Image 1 (cartoon, rainbow, N blue to C red):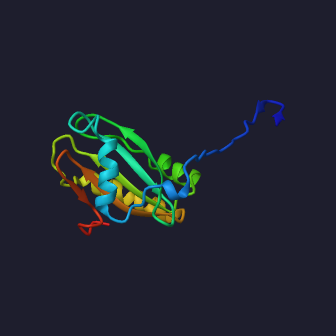
Image 2: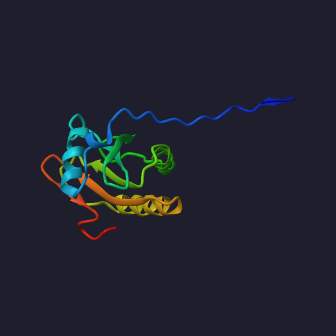
Length: 150
């Protein structure tokens, strides 16, 4: 569409899915999610923080995993809009947030708690549910859901 003094771009949204439903991993517990996520954090576990989101359908099958932030030793900046945009694009019903702590401690920081609440509110605003926030370290993990922090 052309207007005299500017052009309005066309916006398209796409998601290509080449995995059969029967072949998708099912997340039935935090332990299942932690196993999937451990692979995502292999290259950065002790070096720097990264943040991933697992996107799940209503049957708890994994639609995909996305790296939504990379940071330094002390943290990573997360843009909630990117998480919600991706969730809506893939028609996700549920989300599981995860990040690693290079220090090896899985104790949630104050910033971790604030981020979790903000993402939870954002999900609720668009009809999604944040199921968990998992902090992964080399030898263990902490589930916000299991600890009653959600």
